[in-house]
Length: 111
Length: 111
Image (cartoon, rainbow over all chains, first blue to last red; front, side):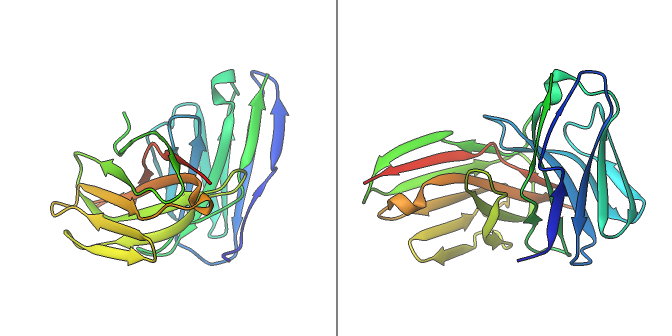
């Protein structure tokens, strides 16, 4: 299995606070993705990266920012968390045109 | 707007029945993948189809990529309780690095 880990696995935070989720991969994959998963929506793309410091927006990027300062790390930040951002967040990585490997997810609750 | 629509959203069948899940889009994809997700885990790849009209078989699962590379289907023959799970299609939009997922089909197979 590809080495991809997410931290934290669970987090409860208050509305209006900043939150950062971390994704770390050990496969030297070029591409990394952040998704959120909500009932009835499958996985929706938030942001993705195609290299160090190269990122772009996905379908549901409002309220989220990302950074990729090293190949292995992709950070997702909620600048000011809202209840609508309560979700399960998944990170994925892949090499060119191959299988996407996923972390185990982060369950975020905004109260 | 979800670029990849799956149908049906839910499927509940008896062991031994056949079923087909559809994945449709108005966009062209350079490749299309099918994943299966278990509760509390990230999705795991089942198959990748690349060529328009391509058919791939994986034991009792048959995957087809549409001629125009805008749609795909997953057919399961003689479903078993172990097939229970969330099935997701995913596609790399042509000429982009985006990997987007469908809305998902939750399958339950009863013994």
